[in-house]
View 1: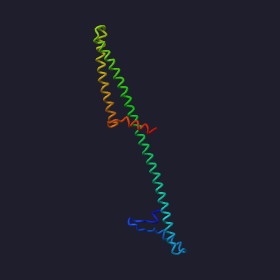
View 2: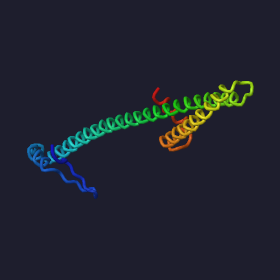
View 3: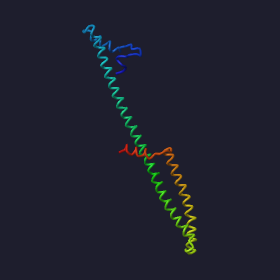
View 4: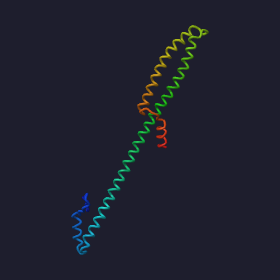
Length: 170
């Protein structure tokens, strides 16, 4: 199987392969019909070749589509994991920040409460200084997490996208 048995150029001109002429010669007992039979069968053979080639292309396309879909799903799963990880960290950081803020407020109240002994007020003052530094560090960490989220998702509202990705996986 090399080239086509029937070649058709851009102008619609038909050229028959040498094999068609040889088969027509072998069919010469049929007379003038021999050439027609050879040409019709050449059309059948080429048509079958084209069908086979088309089926191969369709199978290749299905493989490529499957691989692309798998890559797409893999990427979206990974992005969802990143998003969830950052979201969890943000929640944990917010909870810690809230608790740290409450503890800081309690320490400030104790540090200025005249009914507390001097040692308690001094320790509370020292604690507010240390907790203030922790709160500044935590605030910076929260900012880093937000920047990370912004980089991953190029800003904008992503929660609906993540919900959509999850629904596609289900």
